[in-house]
Length: 112
Image (tube, rainbow, N blue to C red):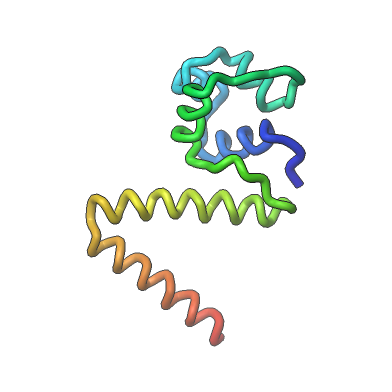
């Protein structure tokens, strides 16, 4: 189970295959600042614009689910939702096809 926002940031960063330096450069803060956030250092603050960049870069909502399984599922579903929304904008028919295939796959596995 996740205990802090920092742990959530670390998991999201690792899933995006970014190191601390890359993430820090992308959102405009120091590597030490990212490290302090991830390690849950007390009294660490982050400016709103940097938080918005962090959200955009890691594509997560800072909501912490109850257990680790829910956390991983929540992260993956949110990421898929963001990617799907981008696909809807660029290729609506492909997005519809993808969603239909996903739904049919779920139906198939539930009947199995």
